[in-house]
Image (cartoon, rainbow, N blue to C red; front, side):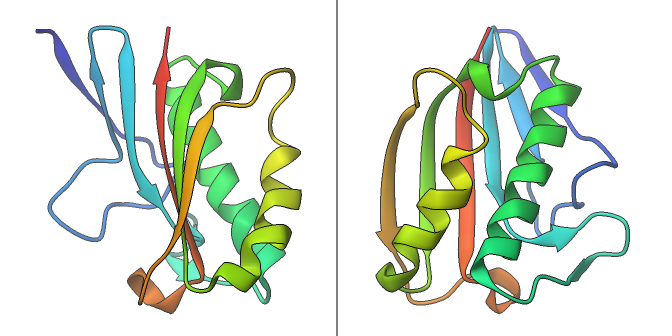
Length: 126
């Protein structure tokens, strides 16, 4: 197994003992991303749309570091603080993909890091 750690300054530093992503052979496993601005480490979004855009920008930066983009994404997992946010997150999320959407599940959880409302992880392949 060939394993490579992927980290970029264009996405937030991990807030625990993990990496932004791990590339195994041609599969990229991206840790869950929240709406932290990598420039200052703060959550600046004022609403769920802003949070979702920041999360997707963070994911895009990690994909780019691995020389991939959203077209390479095979699966995502979305964690929400409340399922009532589902339509708003879907609206923003959909704008980042062209063509076929990846497989996905969305679940509501009791809490997320930094008290955000959305966290998204991805699996992508070359």
